[in-house]
Amino acid sequence: MTDLWKTIDHPTVVWANDSENWLTKQIQPINQSLLVVDIAAAIRGSEQGSVGGIDGVYPLEIKLESDALRLRFYDFVAYSVTAEMFTQQGNQEASVGGWLRIFSKSFYLEFVERSTWATSGFPGDLIHYQINTLDHTIDVVTSNPPEILKSIQ
Image 1 (cartoon, helix red, strand yellow):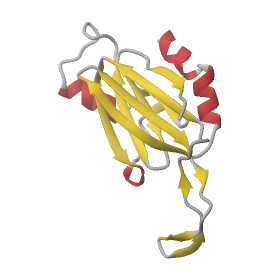
Image 2 (cartoon, helix red, strand yellow):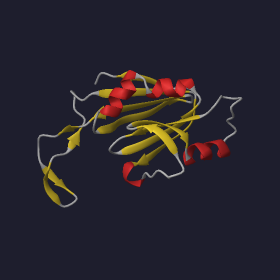
Image 3 (tube, helix red, strand yellow):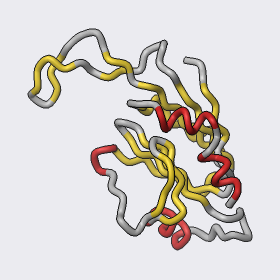
């Protein structure tokens, strides 16, 4: 359980959770055991447009000057990507964090525990990490804390 708290208190995680308007930049399963998720801070676009029938709005975009993070999940058990508008969290779930979140109890973690043969014996105690952006929710179940890096665009 100590790795769980070290990860949520990691200075980069604290900085990310205090920031605003993250967008998903890229999700790439590198191979059978590595998942890389890149997110970047959205910056207001320079040209107004129309969104959902509302005129005069500025789009949020990833630009070269956007702050960015890379999360590397080694030996993940499962991951899921959900369009942000369809994401929900139940009252029975328990988590800490904001944009980057760790669940101690979740429906997704229960699903993975019931639908796979992963156990605390192998690969180890499972942890549910969640990356929330303005456009997606990325859920990852693994027994290893992710490597978190501020990345260069």
